[in-house]
Structure formats: structure tokens, C-alpha cells
Length: 235
Image 1 (cartoon, rainbow, N blue to C red):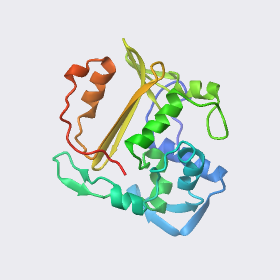
Image 2 (cartoon, one colour; image 1 turned 90 degrees about the vertical axis):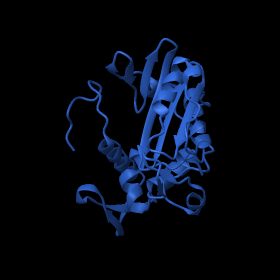
Image 3 (cartoon, rainbow, N blue to C red; image 1 turned 120 degrees about the horizontal axis):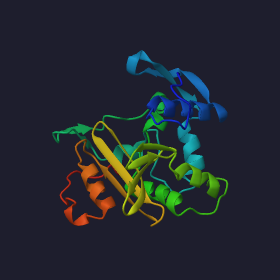
Image 4 (cartoon, helix red, strand yellow; image 1 turned 180 degrees about the horizontal axis):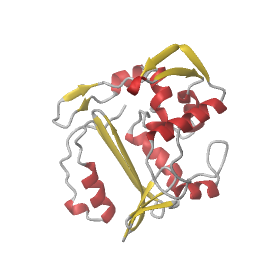
């Protein structure tokens, strides 16, 4: 991995950086590579599952303590029975085309592999914008503030914090982040000052959520479309 600039000087979104951080965490918790459970990914990269996996670590240290009982990284029967089917930009069903196995979790978990529900993710946001006192699972106040403050200016209207984009508006600053996998789109925005947030998840690649969230943040809710189609990616 090549370092292109001194951390903190510039901003650059890096999926590989997130994956590298995951590998560091896996190493620190004593994760061992399972050479009998491997798969090849883009560019012919071979990745093997680890034991314990990042899925077990995240459940024990974040998801379960935060009450996110319907969230995880490894595919299971609950996801099989309740996951909403995805749709491509033309509205055609893509099916359950992403069923993460051990190698897939080792490759993609930190880069966008969390399977969750709007309710569960809202619980995570609440821990950020209205946190409980620090404990074995919750960050210290100073650490949380450092994570959520602007670190690098992206443009006149936004900055990047540690993992979150911050949009600067006349109505205050809003944390925001979005993403998508084939068949799905999601977006969240939250205000620490107001202790409020939005969680939008759709089982469609063409959800139109950016237009919706922009108007919600600006306060122009009357112009926000109310006919977004496609169910949430919920369990």
C-alpha cells in the first residue's frame, strides 16, 4: 500500500484503506487465516476467512451492546428469509446476489459489508449524536468529538471528519454518508446539535435519495418527493 500524502493534509476516499484497517483490527484480536476457506476477488486477489472473524468482533463490541440484533456481516438464515430483493437502475429484480461468506467478509466488511435495518442503524446514529456515558463499548467524549469534527476541507460546503462527511448549511452542520451495492442504495444524515437524523435504505440502485436528503437537510421538505419506490433493505 502506498501513502500518497500526509494524513490530515488532504482527503481521498479509499476502500482499500478501510480494508487495511480491518486487517489491522483482525490481527490485534488474534485472527488466524483459514487456508481451507478462501476465494478470489477482483484482479485475482485471493482472500481467506479468519477466525475469529471481524463479524464476531463487531457483534461482541458494537452491534450487540448497541442493541443492533438484526445486523451482521456473515450471511445467515435470518437474512435469507427477510432481506429485501434488490433492483437494478431499470427496476428489474437482481435477487439476493450478495451473500457474504467468510472470505467475502474478510475482504469487504469494513468497506461496506454491513447488513442491517433502518431501525438498527438509527440505534448506531443515536450513540453518536446523543451518546451514553463512556464504558467498555462506548467511546470517551473527547474521542467521539474528535471523530465527528471537520478534519479536512473538501469544498466550501463540506468537510470530512473521521469516516463521516460534514455538510455545512445555513441550518447548521450535518453528518452524512451514503453507499450502495448492486441492487441497493442507502444514505444517512444526522445533526449532533439537534440530536436528530434520517436513515434511508432502498432495495434499488436508482433510489433518488440524494435529492430527498438534500431537501431534508435544507429544510425544504415541501419540495421533497414522496413517491420514492422500492422497499427498504431491511431484515
